[in-house]
Length: 177
Image 1 (cartoon, rainbow, N blue to C red):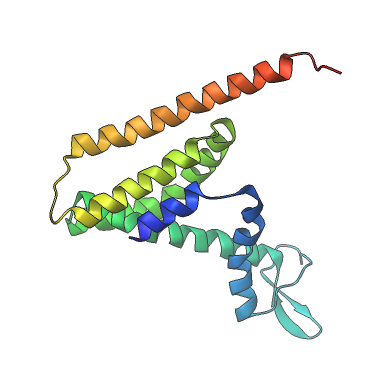
Image 2 (image 1 turned 120 degrees about the vertical axis):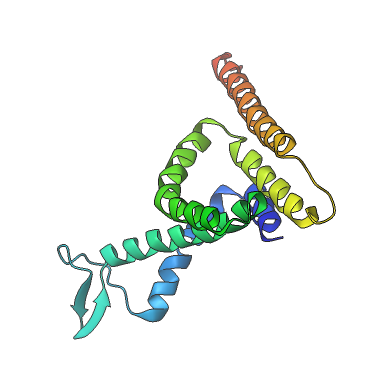
């Protein structure tokens, strides 16, 4: 059900939520120790008013690694939907930690180009979450699952291109006074 919740959050996401979301990791670090606003060379820690404090460099590293952990935890249910083989679960989780940050930046760039991509990704999470929930009672074949996922992605890309073309046509029309 966590995947369904995450999918709904992604679909309902608004651009003004980004500032609040990005400071949660920093807020967690600030609960542990004070964070300086000033860099101190390449150091992770500095002294502020004779107290040890984290530099923005450590804060950035903390947030990035926290994101890696969240991505890794989020990938566990996805692999368990495919296989219960312990080696595959461990290996996919390790590769998720290593590679999902790069995939995130790729998707973030693609999200700028394809408006409906985030909606499709949210829909995919909801589908996988529901598939996992009902898997004990209803078996959905792997090919059908992949077909649904690919269809969602293709539809999102095509609809995004159609939307962008319509916006470009509107922008090219002469403005009436």
